[in-house]
Image: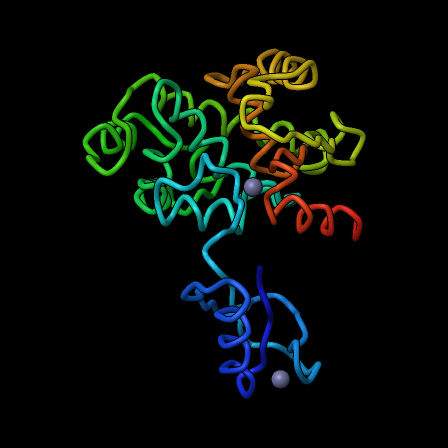
Amino acid sequence: MKVFACCEHIDEGIDYIVNETKKAPLIEYLKTEQKCFLCGLKAEYKIYDEKINRCDWCEKAENYIKYHDEEWGVPCYDDKKQFEFLVLESAQAGLSWLTILNKRENYKLAYDNFNVKVVSNYDKDKIEELMNNSGIIRNRRKIEASVNNAKCFIKIQEEFESFSKYIWSFVNNRPVINCFEKIEELPAKTDISERLSKDMKKRGFKFLGPVIVYSHMQAMGLVNDHLISCPRYKECMEYIEKM
Ligand SMILES: [Zn+2]
Ligand SMILES: [Zn+2]
């Protein structure tokens, strides 16, 4: 249960939630456009009880929740972000996504803010430097793969205008919309992720098998895999409708 309130009606919003749910409400500063439940003017706050039925995989850490609420499943056409995620995902193999997410800022610093051109030119010395960086996963094969993948990424940009155009063509430029009720229903990979992974492999990419590629599709919003009970399911549908 939630209400949106302007700064003048925040107290009324809190009273409303407390009365309805008998729970101490949470209050968040709003980033999206919403109207105040009392006056209809622009709302500044979201006031809600604790029962948010998020996809429960994210609930083990605060930054995981933030990632789920703000990024995961939002259709992405930004090549910089696409590349960032490919670097992080290829580093993930065998580890949890949360482990990688916790190192995201370290990666950003270590990898020149994910500038694909710069990464594609990393030489032996830079690879050694990365191997000595305790803030990232120090696996030589993964680090070498990230440089190799940057080169493949640029080739795709040259051929298709952008990497986003290339990857979105695999879903005919429209996100795949699922309607799963339970986490167990989510597939680890699909025919599309198999095809995409195979094509990427043919183009020289490494460490991006069909399971990792499916994670990438989920993160970049090529598929809406929020559970239908999750508030983000509908919110991601709204991005899709605006496309
Ligand atoms: Zn108001
Ligand atoms: Zn969700």
